[in-house]
Length: 443
Image (cartoon, rainbow, N blue to C red; front, side, top):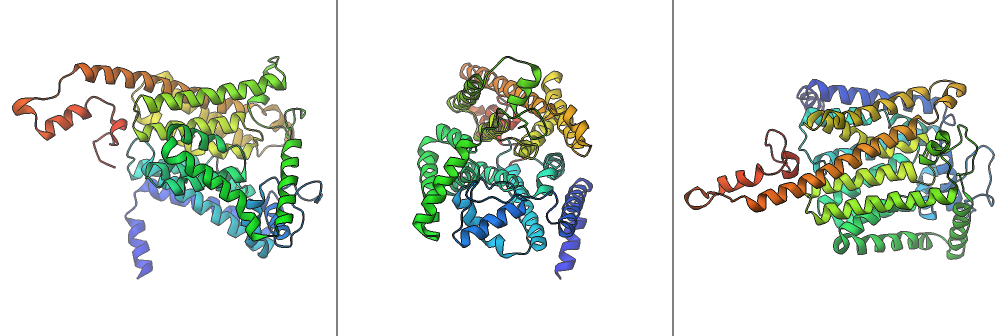
């Protein structure tokens, strides 16, 4: 019976949906086969499972108190180590496969929820399948390496969807957990707290406090306090700005500045980071004050925060760009559906082409990758500029629409039927502002 139900469900899918399912399935199967054969090659799962085992046995987690020449340093919070503890029980081969399937399941589920609830346009089935396909190029590397960024973007997507669905506790918990994995997702939490101060700010702060306190209930308090001190020391010593330009350097805005030969020291770069973060906050607050629909506002906040995290964050690697995979996919899809200026619609396509090229280069020898080190931050900058242009254009458009509506008169008298009034309101804003698709379908 179940096989028949699956068969009928499969036959009911259109060709684009079937393509998305097949492509994602093939990618996951190939990745799982690779790590089952070589569990240590191009995989960071051993770092997580080792940290989980050390947590269970109350052993040191952080460098230099713990050092293994075959493993990179563990940089996440003690709470993350508690969550990795169950994974330490699994063998290397089984753990690598289950970890990737678990991460991919969370990611795809959160992406589907985000696409249904947050995206300003009500996407049909073909458009949702296209969104999943467009998100794949920036997701493959992270899934292949087993990076925790897959979990991170899933939590942020779920946080945005939770806000729009009114599930404020879930949203705060997801964003707080992402923050306790890697500190810089706090940017998204602070933006949501700025825009929704009464409903989100207190919940987010409480979730952070509970997340920081929970490890004390799961291990000896003196051990946990010592690990927090070691974690803080490691974070303070992890300065990547002065690394020489090589494949080990961060792929962020600082790399683009150095490659372009722009005279700037680290202090100036920190000022630029704060300035760009402040700009994101101002645009987000302006969208809130100008009464943007929540669909559009959340999409803009999520997009701007994601771009800030990869361009101005403290530790951006090539795999970190999965944080903008949903943003890029949506921007390309919106450019295809939008009827704005051609030059504006070309910006996401240019960024997408640069990102795909950067992922292709990663399969070449190191000498070739060294030549194209700056492709990733350039692609991120192009996407950032496109988002800023789109956000500012929408702000001015919203102001003009509001002013026009204030001088326009709705139907009156015998013509003031509910249908006529609804049509009057709908025609005075773009279709993506009303929660409708281009053909008028409701969410």
